[in-house]
Length: 335
Image (cartoon, rainbow, N blue to C red; front, top):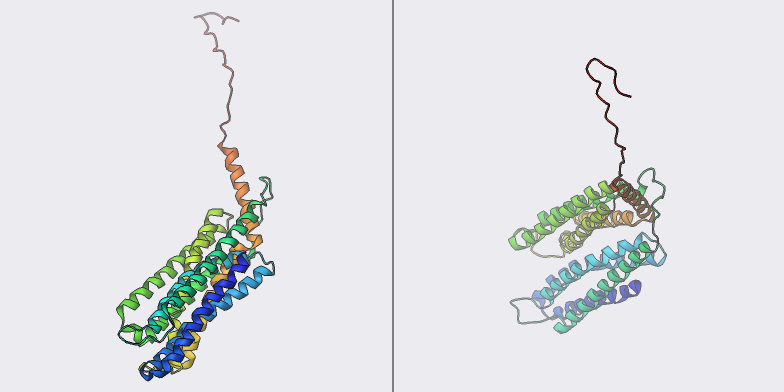
């Protein structure tokens, strides 16, 4: 069910892309709009195509029965919901510009319907796969006398480094893109919004790194907190990926009225953004790896069993000892 729900999610994004392309064709009759609309359409399509590719690759790994890909697909689908809503806002701002008497896009219900289909498909994917992961974990109880693992497995040890790298690349590429984009530097509201996105990435990344480091001792709660932090980081990265491509388009000379940026800089900035997203997904895969789950389950089971043993109060029964009979003054003690 979760894999089947990926299809309407991708279909909704494709529907929005078709409506965007139709609007670009309609803008040809308005020369003062066409150049900007065509350039901004590329900015919209770059993150949409990137997300669709990641979704397809992850779904293919799940279909290939890779257990570590299931929680990754759950996180990607959940993060795709705010991404889709953000792309929809950009779509409506582009197709129905404020201050103009012309609507170049299709009917407004087209965008709303396409967004609804994509969001519902992503939510269905996340819910169905999350239930499947939970059901699999409950079907494999860990005996309390399971052997204590010698050390944390490799996927779990690599998780803090991968998530940390994803946070650094995401924040660094977003900051670089904002500095190079003269449109954004002159818009305080936009800077404030992406400042909050950077804070979300920083908080999620730091929280995930710290929690994953503690989880290497085989603790279940920090492992779950690491997933939550990485989820927040992934949301911020995908939303930031909607802004970074504008620098790429500027560097390619597609946006008029902007300061020139070397093409290699614009392409490199978005490549670093994509690398940060992939690093975060690999970190989530490390947390969902079967070796990591088995290690944490066995360690936590032994820890819970030890707490149960030490929690019992051991009754101590002591027989009363007779007190010695005091000896009379100047005589022998009574037998």
